[in-house]
Image (cartoon, rainbow, N blue to C red; front, side):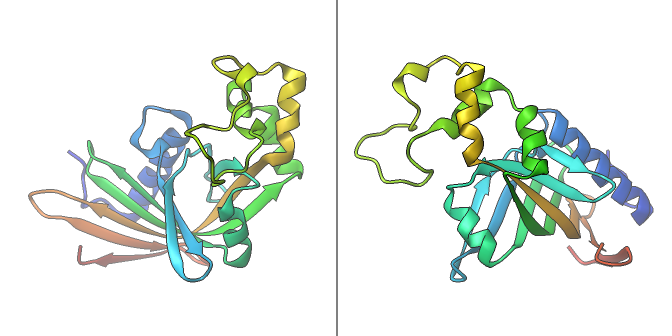
Length: 200
């Protein structure tokens, strides 16, 4: 049973631990959060992303995407974003407000690309951009790459589309659900860490 009456600093330490595990363990609930951003300043777009890294020192969450994705255009216009994590086993939800930065063809992208497996690189070799209309159901991967990984030289062609999205944490809304009583804590991280217990 999670001790929801812990010191707020201990809760923040636990949050950091969960995010670190989520970035490393593909079977952990925090490995695939929901990421939301403003779309054309008119609506909100949400999608599941794969958490690739959590930088505990800089408080940054990172995932990878295709530079041709429509969300790149939206994030360039408005870089305020939001993550939602939920683990049903421990009954913890995190809503995290972030400021997004786009890394394309820079040192951050190069280093992450260097560590990206051939299987994952194949996603960036599609001829059509993500979100493109297609006459038939397809994933856009060339037929000669179906069920196989690209060779190293061919995989490098995907780098031009590869992008790392880093997200600086501004605020965390932590919620613990329990039949004995829910608990909710707001953690502000802009300049000085501030904790506020709030009604769930």
